[in-house]
Image 1 (cartoon, rainbow, N blue to C red):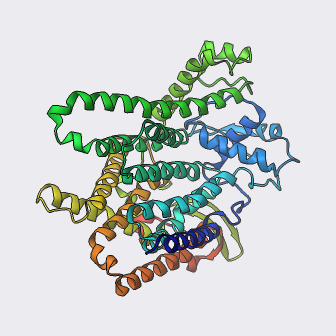
Image 2: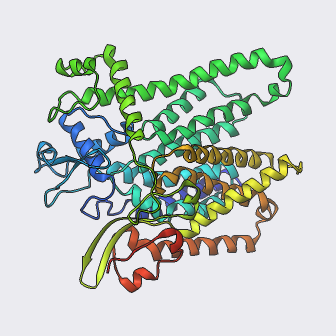
Image 3: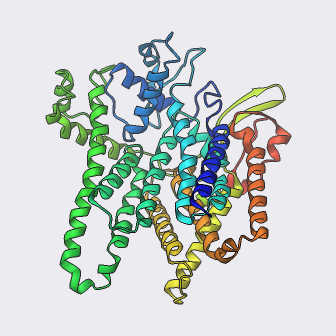
Length: 502
C-alpha cells in the first residue's frame, strides 16, 4: 500500500474512531444531572481549588485539578457561589473523606465532568494509534478499537467527575510513546527517556495505580541495549553507567512533572476552612498561617505531610467483607470476569427505574481474558518448549504487556484494603492490547494474504460487541428499565450480582 493511500485511510479511520467515541463517551456527558459514586468527593475537592481552600486527599492532585479547571473554564454555575456549596460539606463516616451533601437544584455538571469525558474521548484515538503503530495495519486496528469504544464500564466512569478518564488518557499516552520508541530504529536519546518520564509522571499524578507505567523504562532500556547485552561480561561497566544515566534522566522527567503538579496544589490551597488542618505538621500550619504555600523552601514539608496522609488513609480503609450483603468491593482475581457490578445510582418512576451501574460489556472483557490466557500460553511455549517466535516484534510486545499485567495484578493481590472493579481498568487496557497482539501473531499469514473470511469474522465480532454494548447501555446512560427488562441483563449474576429495584 502506497504512503499517500495509507495516510488517507488513516485520516478516514481516525475520523470514524472520533465520531463513534464521541457518541459513546462525550455526547450528553452532563447527564444524569446528579452525582454518583466518588463524584461527591472529587467535586468537593475541585470547589476547594476554586475557592483557595487547603485540603488533603487520598489521591494525587492532577485529576482533581482537571475537574476544577473544567468548572473554571466553562463556569456553568455562575449563579451559585462556590463558597455556598462548601457550606454543605460533611465528612463520610466510613470513607473519612469530605463531600458536598446537597447540590442546589439546577446545578450543572458540564464543567466538572468536562475533562474526564474529553480525555476519554481522545483516548479512543490514542488506543487506535497504539494498535496501528504495532501492526501497521489500519483496518484491523480500527476493528479492534471497538474494544475500547464500546466498553460500558469504562464509559460510565469516564463520563463522570472522577479520575479514570484522565488516568487512562495519560497511561495510554505513555504506552503510545513507548511503542513509538520501541519501533524506532535509531538509539533512544536522553530526550526520549525524559519525555517518557514526564508521561509516566502525569499518569502517577492522577492515581498511584498509574505507577505501573514506570516499568516501561526497563523494557525500553533492555530493547535499546539488546546488542550490548548479548556480551554482558564485556559491556558490564558501560551498561551499568548507561542505565544509571538514562534512569536518572527518566526519573528527572517524572519528578519534574510530579512536583509541578503538587506545587500547583499547594499554591492554590492557602486558607483553612472549619479549622480543618488534616494531618498537617506544625511547620505546615505555620506556612498556612503566613500564606506562604507558594514558597518553594516549604515544598518538601508540605509534600511529606500530604504523602503521609495518603499512606495513613489507606491503612484505615476497611478490608473486603464478602459476607456483607451490601459489599461493593471484589477480589482482584475475579475482576477479569467483571465480578460485583456496582449500582451507583437509581431513580424510580412508575413501572420503570433508571440505573447507573458499573456494568461491563461481557464480550470485550472475555476477549481481554482470552488475550491474557493465550499470551501466557505463547510465552510458556517459548520459554519452556523453546518454540520459535514467528514474529519477534509482536512477541516482544506480547511479553511486555503480559508482564505489565502480571505485575499490576500481583501488586493488587498484596493489598489488604477493599478494592473495587474499576481498579481493573488499567490491566483491562493491557488485555485489550494483548488480544490484538495475539490475533495478529496467530493469524499473521492470513492477514498478509488479506483473507476475506478472517475480516468477515472480525466484522461479525465487532457487530456483536456493539450489539451487547447497546443492550447494556441503559445501565450506562441512566435510561429507564422495567424489572423484566433489567432481569434479562442478569447474564452471569453469580459474578455480576445485579439487583433490580422493585
